[in-house]
Length: 155
Image (cartoon, rainbow, N blue to C red; front, side, top):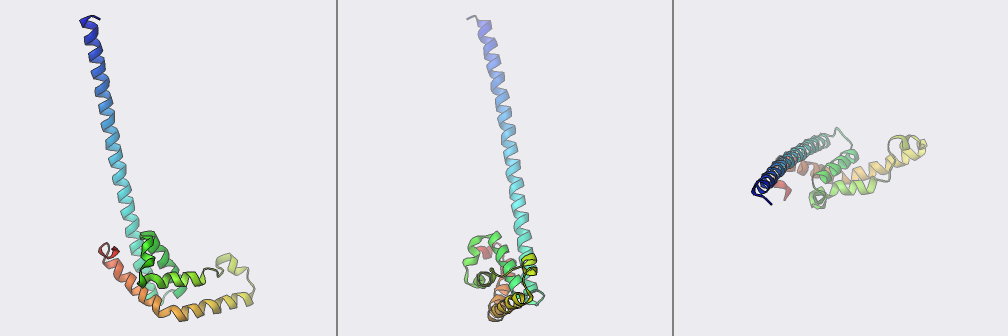
């Protein structure tokens, strides 16, 4: 191999290495950009959940929403934020109302019931609401406070 050939191959090799390094750098920048975007999206989603949690808790406390509906909504929002939140004693009332009323029909399935069946389900729901009202309202107060203390209140 001549010196000229070796120098040409060295130059081509260095050019390839430089090109690959530049490509690797742009890929790394894209990964960082996407990671930052995902983190921003996650933060926006958490903020939205927290805002909705505060709104639903406030609506519960002001009796603008049924105990059952408010408990279900709070449960879902807390589970979105962190599924372990439902294991905390102040929030268990939301889970209990959900567990005791999840078999009841809603929307079009409720419309398909006879008036007698609807009345029976309403009685059952109202009995759960009467029994759980104070616990759910206390859980709503804790949820509203939890939102104000976020993220310190998480752990």
